[in-house]
Length: 61
Image (cartoon, rainbow, N blue to C red):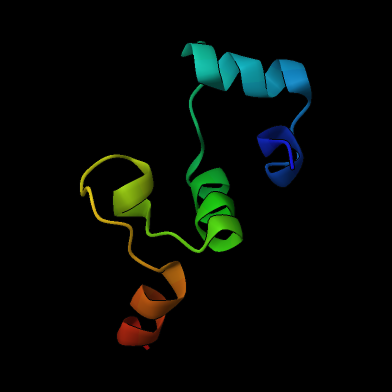
């Protein structure tokens, strides 16, 4: 699956994010977390060990 499809962005729109010409919106980060079942901390590089998004959400509820 192409990341652009997950984010509901055109290929050009996604390329702009990848190249740093556009910023990834928080809603887009949440979509990626849900799709890949990974925490935002892991996806943005704050931690090195993959952590489940679903596990973290359950802790908050």
